[in-house]
Structures are given as C-alpha cells and as structure tokens.
Length: 141
Image 1 (tube, helix red, strand yellow):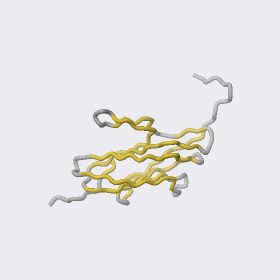
Image 2 (cartoon, helix red, strand yellow):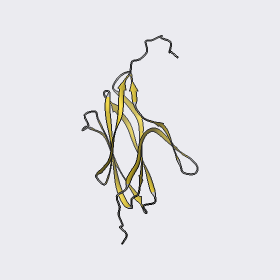
Image 3 (tube, helix red, strand yellow):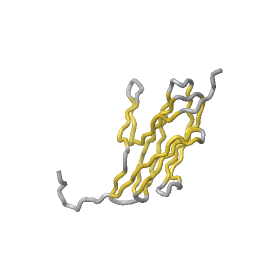
Image 4 (tube, rainbow, N blue to C red):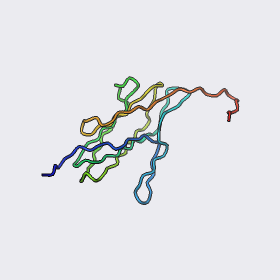
C-alpha cells in the first residue's frame, strides 16, 4: 500500500533581494543574502524574498515562515502559504515576500521554516554595524 501523504524535506532556503524567471521557468536569484551591514540603526529592508525548495513529499501542505528578532522570540514577520507535491520525485519552490523588515539593532535575526507546524530549518541572518569612512576620505584599494 502506497502512503497518500508524506511530509516533505526542505532541500534549501535562501534569502535574496529579488527573483527573475527565465523563459524555461527556472528562477534566477538576485542578491542572495549572507549578512546585513549598516553604519547606523535602525535599518529597513524594503523587500526580502525567502525562497524554499521542498522535495521528497506527497500531499498538500502548509508552509510557515517566520522572521524573529535578536531575542529569538519576537516575531517580526510571519507568512503562511500552501503548496502541493503529487509525487515524491517532484519538488515545489515557494517564495515568501517580506516588505519593510526593520533591523533595530545589530545581532543575529532568525528565519524559521515550518511545514504543517513541524520545524524544518532555523538559521541566522547576521546583522553587523560597520564604521562609515570619514567624510572626504578616499577609499583604499
């Protein structure tokens, strides 16, 4: 007997600035985020996209994506969306758009990805304060 519902695996989760789609349907991720650098706080990201790739599942699912503050508990953004996998050999790519996310202070901000209330991944977006070069100083190179 073949099971009609299998919870999927999260193959990847990336935060980026923007996405383009090729004529063949493939996605091009622009500005994949590894960290946020700013000379002053608070700083607001006008748009961030979280791209998740689900695989090896079967059935209908609800994805939840949360962005948490540096205290690891304050929810700054939350989004739920549904997706379907008809066969374990297929994959589904979901995109969550976050508008005007404010980083109030330096530190690790957290992305949590869940499927049907089961945590699949939790990772940090490191946010750093950097020194701004003195006005009129020539960049070193």
